[in-house]
Amino acid sequence: MQGGGDDVARLFYLKNPQTLQEFQELVTLVRALSDIGRTFTYVAPKAVAVRGTGEQMALAEWLFTELDKPRPVVAEVGLARQYHMRGDADNVVRVFYLNHAATPERLQEIAVYTRNATRIGRIFNYNSSRAIALRGTAAQVALADQLIAERDK
Image 1 (cartoon, rainbow, N blue to C red):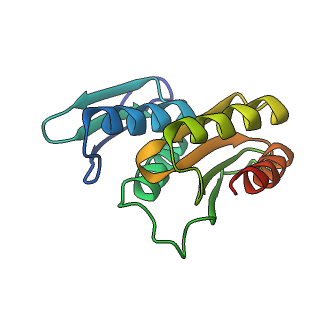
Image 2: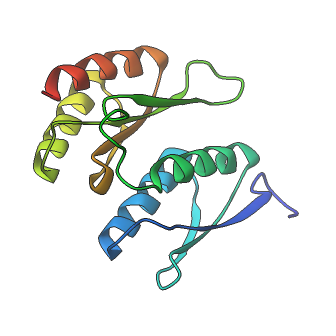
């Protein structure tokens, strides 16, 4: 596409959000962590159209792939998945799957505590997968890893 840096458009079809709220949570999480300003949803087919830079699309694809799946099995829970922004080792996106945060309220408590302690501005819950996704510096993400592990008991 011509003009500006928003030269890539993609259409994603999501499979696993079961409710409108889950669909909206996932789209909001991806839009905010990817810094994508142009996002359009079509609820019935669970479709998401996005436009941004190549780097934004790569991150959006990674996040949708990572989070648009059934809740991880117990062996995967507790693991964290990480994405490094190209050319910037200090700009990290990480998804944490929590094992013991059994309610959305508890997941939110852990996310708020982590946000305040690390000063990470972009941190989001995805309740259906009991996941917390965030974007920050390598040091912030390392501290978040420790804090989340301590609180998910």
